[in-house]
Image 1: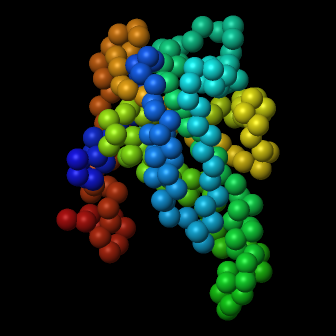
Image 2: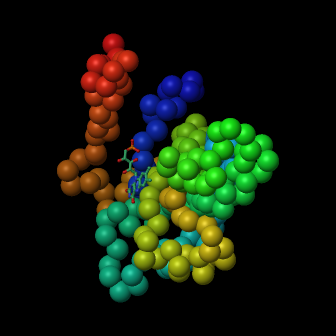
Length: 212
Ligand SMILES: Cc1cc2nc3c(=O)[nH]c(=O)nc-3n(C[C@H](O)[C@H](O)[C@H](O)COP(=O)(O)O)c2cc1C
């Protein structure tokens, strides 16, 4: 598959064949692809917690969901994923990297390293890494869905998997072989991939001038 086809074919997949594990070698390959992402100052302030195998995956859902409330359709689908990858960022990696001589000296180096980052690059870079992982998954014939670790449950996830306190969960990715949802097709039919028109998002020389 050519790269543009992989990019265009990728869609969020929210139900999986629970009986088809993702081989650890493939998970390793996907994380390796993720680490090919660019990062500001080559800081690479990312970590990937791979949960494969029913025990670890179940522990994730136990840490993040209410044991009393019945799971909704979304959760019933996502819980079928045989593997999860949690992507974490670490701000300190950037502070450490930008304190090194080649970054901290020179005419353009501001005293406060935070002035170097118009947005938190640790989250940006981790997000780019996840994008590569998603494309790798698509290329390997897997379904994948990025999703949020609920803020109120982050402490429980840290506790369950020994994640150091300086790591922030940027997002999780459910991975597996795509399969129909256990409840059947969604009531309103499959969701369309609504992309903003290129004319809205691409500006030619001046904001508001579409790139034609
Ligand atoms: C940071 C991030 C968080 C997301 N969180 C969720 C989520 O919590 N639940 C979910 O079902 N999808 C989640 N998604 C998937 C988006 O809904 C999906 O990518 C978007 O609707 C576009 O659809 P597509 O990926 O099929 O092109 C998330 C995606 C990203 C990048």
